[in-house]
Structures are given as structure tokens and as C-alpha cells.
Length: 167
Ligand code: CO
Image (cartoon, rainbow, N blue to C red):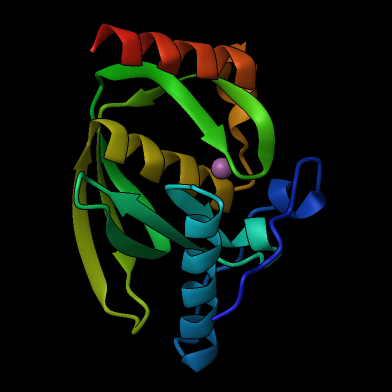
């Protein structure tokens, strides 16, 4: 495995719709392994291939308290809830930017795994948020365009410090 360089905004690859994956080979598996390692190293919960300068429809996310790893190849959102929620997001391609983004609280996704097998997944709340953020990346859509309010890293740290005091 190898750590990959993360493409930072602004970059054309981040704003380009990624192409469909049609070959499910060892090279794809290697890329997914490297993306996972790069995500963990950078404390992310999701990473999309364009963020490592590969314009293909592939993303890796960590879901739930167990931080289950899920690989989304050619993912399509087939259902969303009308109910939305607003929460703070960050992005590996925007090291110092955090902000409130409105997302659906539920999504149903169809995707392929690294072997090309189709599967369907339902996700709620923060998991649904992470999936929507990563699928946006595959369409060249960045979270800064969807932000309702932005925060600096200092403001985020202060918020977490307050939460810690309350507990
Ligand atoms: Co991102």
C-alpha cells in the first residue's frame, strides 16, 4: 500500500465529472487500498478518486460506530428522504474549511464493489451525509458551493472543547 497525494482545491480534476469504472482489476483494488490508507492517515471518513487525481467513479467511506469500510464504485443514489438536516462537514481537499451543509437524512444507493458485484445500501444521518458528500465529488460538485455557514478550524476546535467540558 502507499499513501497518495491529496489534490487540494482549486483543481480542475475536483470539478470534473468522473468517468465510469468498467475494468475491475488488480489496479483498481490497489487504488482502493491506497485511497483507504490515505483517508485514514489524514483522519478522513471518506475519500473520492478525484481527490487523488484519478477521475473515475470510485469512493471509499467509513460508516457507523464500527467504522465499517465501504467501497462505492459507480454509485447512484436511487432514493432520498425529503427530510434534510444541517451539520458541519469538512473535506480533505479543503484543509482549513468547515461548514454547515444541508443533506438528506436518508439515502438508498446502488453501487458496485471492487469485483464489480452490484449491491444496494441504505444509510441514515451522518452515514448518509458522508455518502452524499463523496458521490458529489464523483460529479465534480464540491461542498463549499453548498455551504450555508462556514467555520474556521479555530471555531471548530472551540466548539469541540465546549462539548468536552459539558460532558
Ligand atoms: Co470531500
